[in-house]
Image (cartoon, rainbow, N blue to C red; front, top):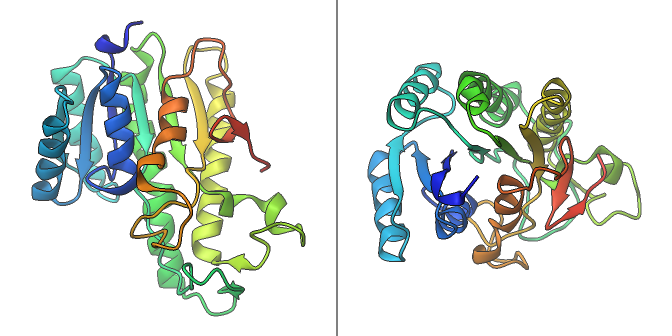
Length: 252
């Protein structure tokens, strides 16, 4: 299927990694639909992409925590495109009180509040799952559907349990647990869809210079969308049910 015939919906795409993912997919000729909680910021992001040569782009006001928005985007994509080839569950929050920039040891397990846990899971897990379920009928209409769940290496239980791991002392419980849960969703959905052309994978974008990642991060923002773009454009014989960073498998 030619890239020019594909459409992608990316949540939380008015800035950061989501915007870079839109830029990367748009550069391939894929029509990109930017989801943004702030309509004005979404339109500004779409205008910036157009100014950079991305022609097929539109912005929609979308909040992943609002079920009514899930129904509305499904109606919009159905009416305008008739299908969905790529879903990138990019929207996410980091609400734990952690010193990401300092990279020092931290552990919020005994201090994180139930409110922070609920808010984190509402966006990072429940919203992503519900949206995927709402859009799955449209993804099934694609000859090569791709679902990319934006995870994090901080969701890896294997690495968190390894004293020699670089993330061993970085434990923001709400965020990390939400990404572990999102990874579980990836594995389970990939299994359910294993006999279809749809591929479902988790992406670790890397530690990127974003509002969430801080200026201390080693990766430039322009690199942040590369893993998502790779997984969104996998060939027919590509992997499903995996956890990747720039083509390399990560441990669960």
